[in-house]
Length: 220
Image (tube, rainbow, N blue to C red):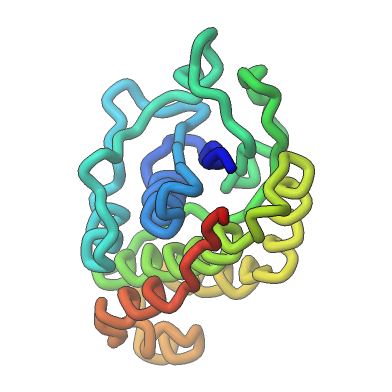
């Protein structure tokens, strides 16, 4: 039986500096070659680089970052570009924006996450925000890579991605926590938002969360 082609997924946000970068890295970490992640932004700055805190939480969690770079979505819309199977937008603004025509006509889905790059406050508060988003992405991507091999098709990918978004609907909790972190962090605010526990969470707990995701099924 021929080896199936890897499933290619493109993650999009505005600047390709935080959410989509983390999603690309997590998918490539968990996908074990059966899934390949890519990322891009609709309007990256000319000198755009991945956010330093996104890179920090990924590295601290044992996820490779060496190949990550910020780029425009036009790189994936040009003739001859790698064809995607699924495109997932990660910021609400892109739901209202027309995407370029993608080679291969991939299906699409939307996973909504607030932008941790907008956080203000202490460096620890900002880092906590990035950790929250990484954990949210980890849950959804972990579910996606465990779609059974026999169910991998564009239609099933789209349906599964949309269902995963409903099942892992942390958005309200994420938004509440991120909003709490946008103001100067007082101990009572952090306790009320549940961030005091998160700020004490060692990076080894993130690693353990990642390692707890089941290995993707392999074709027989």
